[in-house]
Length: 118
Image (cartoon, rainbow, N blue to C red; front, side, top):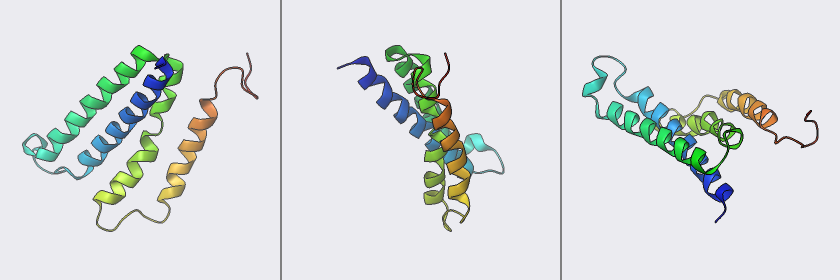
């Protein structure tokens, strides 16, 4: 198995873990002592898992590949937050995610691709 085939899935799973952690933190007892909340500890565990997966991805792939693959965290966070909310996502939520996702795709083009300067 090539190192690319290992680092890309690890990076994407890391982004999902970070997004899940953000979603957990948003509903895990915003008032009071968050340390007593089970959701807060779940969020911290997911955050730690995301970090470890990111470091593992860096062991198999270069930073220039792994770091841009963390940008979908924003894209994954919206559906996860909508699932955890009773009312679902707001109508303009998709547009709020599309902007950063498109910009991240433009920034993360590999060197030598059309439109990239050397």
